[in-house]
Image (cartoon, rainbow, N blue to C red; front, side, top):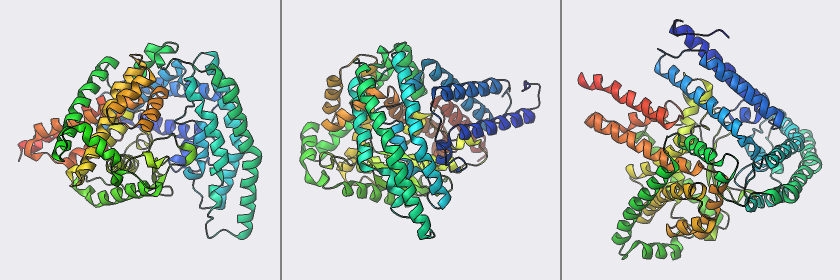
Length: 572
């Protein structure tokens, strides 16, 4: 590819860049059939991702080649969106290079997620509205043994390089495999065939799926579980901090930078967390006293025993989420001009994924698979309904479903921006945490307990700034982390699960609060500079209509927008 220097006309450089974007996106779909399915491209639905060491190296070399080519195109003078696209892809490819050098890929499985649970989610992540789609699914079932064997070889590479997860967390993985076998989610597509299917097709597909599960899938899962128990587990590390791994201090610094997309150090983030915990706790104390309690501790103790806020069933929790998402829907025009077009569903997390927290999974642009809010319901009697309203807005609307659905329907952007976001966790999670408070702005959180729950949800994310850096930078013990969390009203079982999540996923928990704080900061900057002309809908549209991006680039974008409003204001 020839270099496109600044002397080349801008239009020619933009055209060359767009051609590269299209090629990059298409390559990504071919390299990851599962990702193609996720964005509604079903050309490769009969294949699974190649997760072998050779494929990982090949994908890295291909990606680095795109980085080299992109840097040959000078973005000077390009329109704002084209310049932003250049910056976003360059940043993503640079992060990929850095991750490959650290060999992050050699630790691909933990108790939160991994290939074993991802494959078990295939029945919920694929379309099943034609015989061809069922046949594609069967082909994927037959490919599962290869995928699990490839992952085993990757994990063995991690053993050789001393890149090992914590031992007691590895111990959870074989049981997850056993649970998948016991529940057999792979049979879900057999529960309801499309009405158009003939009886002969139903019989044939049923036999083929059951045979593939019994002869290929289950044996492969048993082999994988045995490997985890007998070989991988004994070699797990015993020190919690990721800084104990090779090049560990740098490894955590990279994780912090990548997850927050800021230049804050672990020490600075720890201090921000302590300040936020103090600020939010003071607001909660005010609510407690308004409700007639002498202090926050007595209010929390009363809530913990109040049967009105203790779930009586899994269904009650799921119904709560559905109610709150439904009531927010008609309020969206007060906050946005851009509105999501795709539907969202709410469902319980299956038992074999019980360790997972409530989360959102993006639907497809064609609407064949709606966005999904998957709600944690296991051990429901030890959960609380206090947080449900805030978390429903976080995961559904105006949170994740709102942001990611709008992103998918944007026009005039490269497809990697419409269907991206994995490299901008602070934006995605920061928006969702910011969105929790928007419910208050349209008149919700009428019950003071629910409003306390909103603050508790925010407190939870502030606590994460303290404990993630505590674990990985300051060497806190598991007991020390759990004690800090329970002291800040994270109940015992959840504190244990969350602590294990932070151990397994360094830096990720920092993204929520750091992203929320940046969006709040930019909103206040816009309100201050634009005065009475500030329109919350226009601000939200400006944040969302570029898709997910690092926080520093979001700041540049919003400040450019604020500046562009001044001539308009001056003329009025």
